[in-house]
Structures are given as C-alpha cells and as structure tokens.
Amino acid sequence: MAQKKKEEVPSNYSVLARINQQASSVEVVLAEWTAPHRRPRILHSAMDSTPPPSALSFHNSIPGRHRPVVAREFVMLLLLLGLSASGFGATAVYGGGGGVGFVRRNGTQFVVDAAGGGRKPLEGINGFNAYWLMYKASFPEERWKVRAAFRDAAAHGLTVVRTWAFRDGGFRPLQASPGVYNEDVFQGLDYVISEANKYKIRLILSLVNNFDSFGGRRQYIEWAREAGHCLSSDDDFYTGNITKDYYKNHVKAILTRVNIINGLSYKDDPAIFAWELINEPRCVSDLSGITLQGWIEEMAEYVKSIDDNHMLEVGLEGFYGQSTPNRKKFNLIYDMGTDFISNNLVKGIDFATVHVYPDEWMPWSTNQTQMAFLDGWLRSHIADADAVLSMPLLVSEFGKKHSPASSSSSNGRRRSRRNAVGDERQSVYASVYDAVYASASGGGSCRGGLFWQLLLGEEAMDDMRDGYEVVFSESPFLEHLIDMQSRRLNNLSDYRPSLIDSY
Image (cartoon, rainbow, N blue to C red; front, side, top):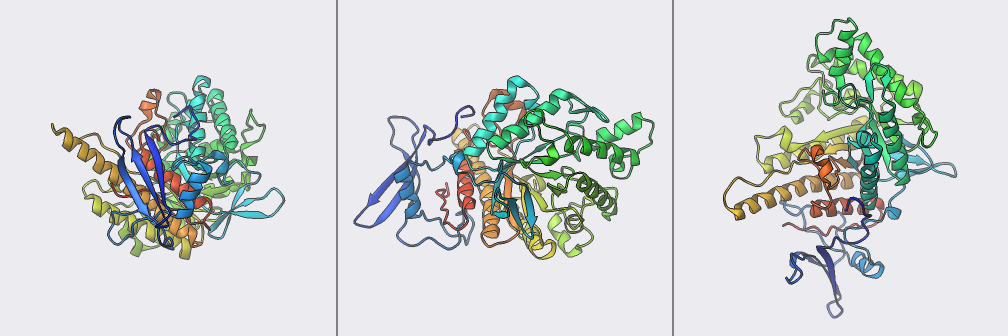
C-alpha cells in the first residue's frame, strides 16, 4: 500500500450493492472476506428508503445520536463510476494545496488566492501530522517514503500536513549549533515542500519544540549556557535575549531559505499553509500567562516583518488562562501558563489551534468520561473561536492510542480487548470529525482536523511508532472514517454519508 496509489478497495474488502427494484431501495454491505472460501462477515447494512437527515453523524455508539443512513445517490455513484468505498482519487481532492495562491484568513473562514484574481473559500480541511518528513527526506535513499505518504494522503483526500521545520542539535540536526545548518537536512525540507506541492498538499511548518525531543527549548538553553549566559530553566527560553535572538535567527533562516528544487524562497511559496511559532508552548514558571504572552507578541511581529504572505498560528493545545477564569474548568488539572483567548488575540496570529488526547490527559478515567470531556473541549473552543476570537480554528492534533492485546491467556479475551480499543479509537475520530463538519457546514469557525500521525506500513518506520499512528493498511475502519470526512468536507453543499456502523 505504501508504494501503490490506492485506487481500489483493498483486496480483503469488497463493497456489495444490491438494488431491490420492487422496494425501491439500495443496500450497501461492507463485507470482510476472512478467507476465499468463506462467506463475508457483514459489517454494515443500511436501507435508504427515506431522505437523508439534515445533519450527519459518524457516531452510533453515543446515546442520542442517530444511526447513519446510506444515500441512494451515493451508492448509485459507486455503481456507475466504479468508485470504492474507501478510495479517494487524488484528482478529486479540493484545491487545498499546491494551487496558485496563498491561503489567507477572512473572518472565521479560510480563502485562497485564485489564479484569475479574487479569492475562493477553502471550505474544509482534512489533514494529518507527519513530523518525520524532513528527517526521512534528508536521506535520498529514503525519499520514497515521503512520496508514498503524500500519495496515500492525497488518495484519501488529505490536503494539509503539519510537520517539523526544526531539528536542533543531536543526531542528524537541521541546526547543528546557533545559525549553523546541515545542508543535507535543509535539502530534505526542500524536497518535502516541493513534493507536497505535486500532490496538492499544503504544509503547516512548526519552528521549534516546547519539549526536548529533537532539541527544542532545552537545546537553545544549552547553547546559551555554552556561550556563557546564566539561564536557570527551560522557561528562560521565552525571556532570555540570547535565546530569543537564536530563535529569530532560525526563523529568518527558514523563511528566507531558497528551495534548491523549485527556486522559491519559503516565504514566497504558496505550498506552505502557515507557520507555527512553537509546538505546544508551556511556561509553568509563570502561570499568569504574562511571560508567554509577551514572547508570542514579539515573535509574531518578527515573523510578519519577514513574511506577510503566509498565515501564522501559535501552536497551542488550547488550555485556558487568566483572561477567562470561568473557562479553566475545561483544563482538567492542567495549568500551563498559556491562555487560549489572549494568546490568539495577538496581532499577527491568523487562526487558533487546539490539540486533544483524552486518553493521555485523563489516563485514570473511563472511556465514557474521556468522550464526555472531548465533547466539552471541542464545544467550548469552537464557541470561543466563533464568538470571541472571530477566527478560524483547527484541531491540529488529535488521536487515541491503540494498546497491545491484553495479557489474558484467553485468545477470545485478547481479541475482545483489541476490538474494544479499536472501537474507542473510531469514536474519538468520529467525534472530532463530527464537530468539525457541524461547524464548517454551518459556516462556523472550526475548519478542519489533523490526526496524529500518518505512517507507512514499513518495518523501517517501526521506530516512528508511538501508539497513535495510523497505517492505512492496518486500520481499515479508521481509513474509511478519514475517507468519508474528506468526501463530505470536499463539497459541503452535498450530503456525505458514512458507511461506518457500530462494531
């Protein structure tokens, strides 16, 4: 699957359509063939004898949500055009990447500069995270993995990828020391940007990490200390003049880099969707939020002084701060020195982001409690983006970890646990996708979601696995949810049915 463009239903799946002319109904069955000699196990069957509901939900396991209905027109389209239930040809992707113009903000919407002048709306975004792209592309013999990932993504209607434009110090760095860059790694980033453009995929490029993975704030602090500066903690990254200068120099090096493949400087390349100041900023030494607010204001102004073509976002997880104490109840037990409202109201910030990992943030709780939290988290941030921020919102990271089989000696119990975790993962994706679609289809602020993270089913990428990965060949039901979200966001004026039922 990694090397082959997905144009057909996988070999172990088939879509069977039966048309009952007397009843004037259509039944679609997603069947899993466990072996050539076996009958298919029916996973979903839905009759469409009434018009589709006005609002569509992927969810069927949450009380109060309706069960999905398969639209007759959609099934007939499958029959007449030979489309698979999961295939999403790259040529059908909405022009969300690789087009002529830059993406910009217009109120709570995204718009893209049109070739003939003017702007057209970018209705909805279905995307993914793949932090590893630059690193893999820095090895010419591994660039096929980047191509394969983009090919898979485009075939599933994914139009935006979020990835790292940093590797600070350590093994195979982009920035080996302040202002000193590894040209092989920079050329890897050149390749990623150029290749994404071929597949009409735009990039959100994050400029530094809050955490010490791949260097991050801690590496900047260590560089400053090596230069004779006395900095006491990682949070001094936000206040130290030397670390702020290091960061600004990195920003300038990235934004003004001239791509050796397409000849464009990054700041002039419309394949880039937006810049991200920092991945998941936190400043726990100053819970008032003043320190981080000041840093965001200074760095947003600096980025825009170099590049006013591209949008900019902070990289926030979405934790509330002192400006909205009544909203801090949504933070659970976490206080990170960030402020979802005031941080996003900084001049130069074009759209807001949230991340959400209910299982990681609430490991002590039941799945039902986690799903209730997820619903409230999304509702509160969408409402605030609508009414307070008046800007677009992306769920720029979300996911649920899949766990290994239970240690029980019973194979049946192990399979039951694996299936339960699979259902819970689907529920998280379905909840996020439903919230995005409900907002976007109603003209609201939430314009898309980017799952964490896309990998290829290759042994050579096993070291990239973190439990949250999506490998299409290993996750057929998540793959189908992702496909269907792309389809219904692709044209919000059309009804986009789901073929997924409770399992």
